[in-house]
Length: 350
Ligand code: NAD
Ligand code: TDX
Image (cartoon, rainbow, N blue to C red; front, side):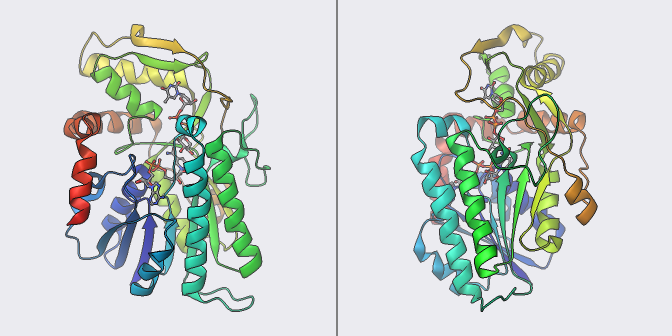
């Protein structure tokens, strides 16, 4: 039985990954280490509270005493989702991004290295440190071309710079110590459990609450959207079959302008929920500082080498996502009134 140390598993993608893995495999164990920052919500994984192969630990990835976790459980795979993830917050306060994203990743690398006791030039079979990164480390594209794994990193925001720094540290542990690592760089995710500060859940929840829909700049910035489960499937494949030391880009060629995303959500909710939900709710606001214009992933490497393909088309994924938020109004309410954090604390103490 393989044991996975998943960090950040109470957040959006980490929680979806835990759902994906525990539903797919009977014979794995998952240890979820999450600090429960504002972005962590134990409700996202509550259905596994009494699952025999799941264990939750509230801890900071920067904490050196996490060595106890490596000692207690025989960890085979580290899957590092934990991060400060919101670009706008990084522009306001970069420091915590460096602490968690850079120093936290370094701490995990050190703990894994010690626990796996690598010798000289030794790739240890069956061990893997998978670092979940982002296409934002490549910077911004013009109107043509895509991010390749060979595209030089050129991050612009404090968030993407911190992710790029952690990527380089992971690469150093492969180059220097031969630690079997992979780095995945995925495009924008959407789906259930995404915190409503990010574009898609923010627009859905603001539509439902009759609030303005803030659109940055001219609304024509482009993001490449992937349904979260397809990202989880790719991470699983890279853990099992990715060549040590390699970077894998993940994306489904689904580029949309932000205004297009807003109009799609408004159009669906207008007929599904309330005819008063309209494009008049869109409010053009001051642009994000240093706002990257366009992201677009070339996923050929993961397709060719590992046989990965996305399963969910955007038109289906966005409907599934909107319906999830409509069916989980208490989840939204608990975030909006802040009770998810008290609740989170109480649950974590159990
Ligand atoms: P999120 O903000 O929803 O979740 C982050 C989780 O990490 C939270 O549960 C939080 O409590 C936890 N965390 C934060 N600091 C921690 C610390 N110091 N110690 C332990 N836990 C901590 O983020 P997400 O959107 O799920 O992103 C997960 C990962 O995927 C991140 O590394 C992000 O850079 C990457 N990524 C995200 C996207 C996207 O579109 N959301 C795309 C590509 C890559
Ligand atoms: O209110 C908004 N209005 C708006 O126009 C918000 C929150 C965003 N935007 C724009 C900015 C971006 O062009 O929408 C686009 C998407 O914004 P975010 O949801 O904040 O995502 P982004 O900045 O693209 O970063 C996301 O994808 C890559 C994740 O937050 C990162 O963690 C991931 O690495």
